[in-house]
Length: 125
Image (tube, rainbow, N blue to C red; front, top):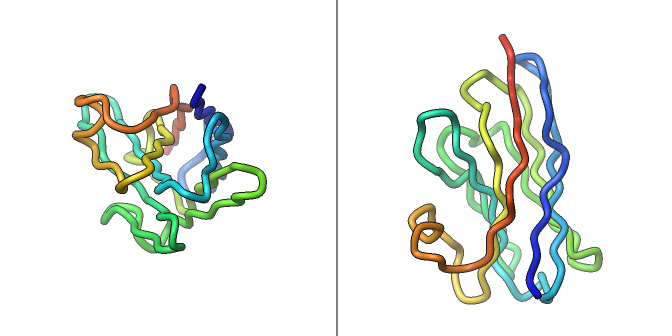
């Protein structure tokens, strides 16, 4: 059974940093494109970053330069480091995985791939 469990969310002051973890089980993470998405209050789901099986990474425009995505395939764990956090970064952060392509936000509605339950980040000014 595929499972993705996010952790590391919490409350932080503007300018601070957080490191999120996503522990995967039920599949071999090294073969998957892994991604982080987020959804702020009243906002659409958006991709934060992804890490494909070949080691390539991509970042959303709003976090470029402030985010780092990494993976430890031996531990089946994905990480997201977010720095210089701002209130607009607040929201629920989701981990997602797919064997054949890097997921997009629309894929959550269609049921493609695998998704975690999310972890909340709240950034106060």
